[in-house]
Image (cartoon, rainbow, N blue to C red; front, side, top):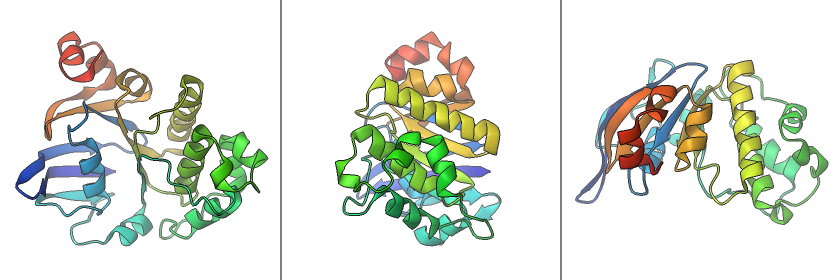
Length: 234
């Protein structure tokens, strides 16, 4: 569903991403792991078109995205949830979700708000609340729901567990796993919480200083003791 070939990105003289290649298979979760500064967020921003790439290519369901602007990548089926839980604070929960449907995948019907409320019941309970009164966990559910309502082919998730209580993280990760298994969604999950990410992922890649240092099934990487100590902090 998503193919990344020799992707490189520079910040001035610094090469932040160095010829990274991997494939995210349809209906699977691919975890992207590594320490701070490894290049994980840079990679997601380049895939979604928010950063220019120095070289390489990104293919979404066979379509080469070189030269395709960010908003068109969204219409082709790419949804990006950056870290930071960026809701529109002055709008209600329902209004935030409605905005998500404006960028829906071309040729698809948007996911209903009722489906999002089924996935995240607390959002249904607070549908008319202004987003600025939500807790951190509720905001994270809202930004994920806002991305899902556009019926994407691929969901890019950047650090969804950052700063959240373990109970909330477990709920969000269970929902993501359910979407993959029931709806066939493809997910690229960037996480520093390697243990949690590997527990729900099918496949995983590890970045270090902008380079790919490991790629295998999540189960195999979780058992690689040397890799866990060197790059994953486990």
